[in-house]
Image 1: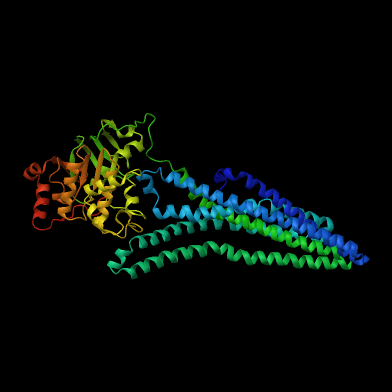
Image 2 (image 1 turned 180 degrees about the vertical axis):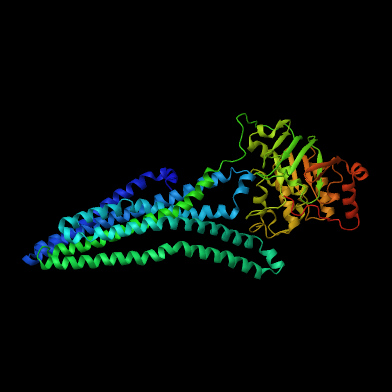
Amino acid sequence: MLKLLKYAKKYALCAFMCPLLMVGEVVLELLIPLVTADIVDEALPAGDMQMVLHLGGKMLLYALGSLFCGALAARLASVAGMGFGSTVRGEMLENIQKFSFSNIDRFSTASLITRLTTDVTTVQNTFLMLIRMLFRAPLMFVVALVICVMKSREVSSVFFVSLPLIMIFLAIGAPIALRRFKKMMKMFDGFNASIQENFMNIRVVKAFVRSEYEKKKFKKSNDDLYNASINAEKIMIWGQPLMMLIMYGTILGVLYLSAKAISAETLQIGDFAAIFTYIMQILMSFLMVILLVAQFFMSEASARRILEVIKEKPDITDSDSSVTEVKDGSVEFKNVSFKYGEAPEYALKNINFKIESGEMVGIIGATGSSKSTLVQLIPRLYDVSEGEILVGGVNVKDYKMHSLRDNVSMVLQKNVLFSGTIAENLRWGNKNATDEELVKACEIADARSFVESFPDSYNTDLGQGGVNVSGGQKQRLCIARAILKKPKILILDDSTSAVDTFTDAKIRAGFRNEIPDITKIIIAQRISSVEDCDKIIIIDNGEINDIGTHDELLERNEIYRDIYDSQQKGNDDFDLEGGDR
């Protein structure tokens, strides 16, 4: 928690002024019982109404001053607290944007969302409570206790019994609470993952009539979170009555000892009224300290999870001699091998091939053969484990990542569109693209006809995730968006699977005729999608099985011939891709 406080520097003035104002509030609040005692013990017995009005005026001024200080402190605390939370979220998102795919693999999406929302809110509330109560509660507790002891040592002796009991309870309960709250936050990750998966795939759930199954899955994650929350809160559930018992026991003890002191005429009524007020302030202050400590322990688990994201070092970074210009779209793999993290087996083994700039190359292979993994190495979404990859004759590790990825346009297996219009989505490829360039890119991707058939044409709102267009239309828009980047290399990772073979052929013809200088790499599951490529690479179990033209492979390669024969028998959509990573 303390390590996160550096993100509050921007709001240091507010955070500094708040405790000072809280000190002013406490001082003025503590003066009121003393004035009350003077009224009861001096002004009223003497029947001096002028003195009563004078002291009453002082009480009113103290109360208004205390109110002003408290209200302004609360305002400053809110600004500092919310600003602190905003800064922490911004720092987390900034670092997440630098993550490579391997970094993202270590954090689930649901976990990142929980950390950005629930965890940050917990820490933010703790910080808010900290700057408001860190000075106020201890100061009020100490000063009020000192005044009580000065007025009556005998009555104040009650605290020397009750306070140690509370400290013992804290020492025992705090570590247990911390462990349980850590477990609860993990359950939040699972709960968010369940909700996110359900909502994102609601159409599939309905199509397969799996609503009941999803309800049961949700119930399990919800019950797990409920049980973990109850288990974490048990300390508070048992602690609160115990604290109340000690507090009211203290009050009873004070009342009993005060009654004896008044009877013995060692304590005046006014002093008793002041002491009783101070007692309530002492107990409330101590309760605030306990809540602050409890909140601090609760937030420790959240703070750790936040720091894990902030301190996560991107696996892929720019080198000191980063190259900013990509000369051309040539690609060469030299003895490349790759495995995911600490996985025991290599996903790709000893990959060697070269693609000339402007060539159109097809990649084909069975499910799980790591075709997608291979192309993700080109823009450094992952880094090779062994060997090297050259783009434009330069090792990809020597490029500035922004420059490399800006020149390698990739359409992933899962087509993603964002909320907004078609034009806004297309301009993700080039924010400065003209309307004419949008039209041209859509022509190449064979998307112009259906886009212009909408009443609002390019200003048609797609809805969240592009729900207003079909799968094939979504793929063509994603291809058009990638073309708008005007890259040196265009990679299509099974990005025409949802279009018919005629449309697929038109898109490839557009590639060859309209963007001949761009290197095109097409991963496909249909032979028809790659048969006119300059060369076709067959991947089998993470290794290159063969490289050649359609005719060459059909003549000599058994894997390619089997796929071709299977698709020619009528199953043109013979599944080669499936869940390929």
